[in-house]
Image (tube, rainbow, N blue to C red; front, side):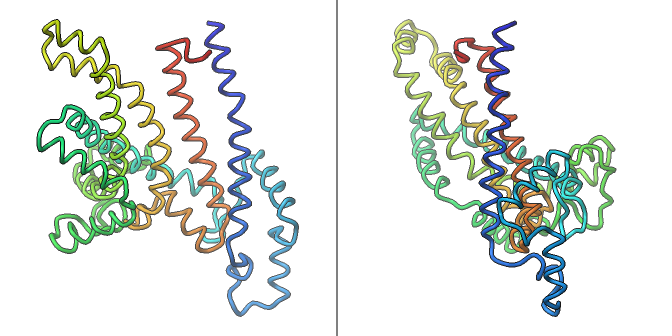
Length: 336
């Protein structure tokens, strides 16, 4: 019990410094974005006096270091600032929008797993033409920009084939959305028993989730292929083959031994997909936290950007922490 407590404390003690470092880097990078928020808020016809007064009110007349200290001080009080685009507290905006991003990222990761692991096995086992296709697939998807693939998806499945709904939002405008419980349109539709909304939500989710999944399946495919190949080449796998163990069982044991490495890359991709969702949300007008952050960058509205960075960092660190704990429970030597 004491070893688990010590392991948890050793991991948690680094969380605050990591978040502080991420926020500091993000703050100074965001401050390099051209454009004066005061001018953008007041418009081109504003007088110099009104612009100067607003800059003073927003603290923009102070040094960047002082502005960062004010931001950190307010953050400690639970205040992420106010977005001048929505005129609402950023914390409220993010609580409203972040579930949509998590829904997209989660379904994107599930599709990546369903594509990547079978492809990796086909490559590792050299299953004839399927093995060659899997190898080629792994090379191609690793070079595909997610926003470009999203545009291709829209052009093919919406414009040409007209199989997919219009890439605007998370549900058809003529469909009554379910009452918000979790923030996930799919889960809320299931909870409400609103099957029309569920079908519409899944139709709108398919293309953006598949876009993220195809791009993210490349690393999973390569990791699965590499680990299964190395496991099959190990002495114990050769002994299983010589002993007459069925090939299916040998492959199953090899995949089981490769799972820790596959789980690691999946956990890393979960956090990575939050960044990928930023552009994919914009392409599909998803309305999540990623699109909210992009609008903040385009309009020099820094607080939505910093809020998104904070939420994404906390989520990523939480995922990594859970994976570390699972590793420790499986093998206590991992914490040494």
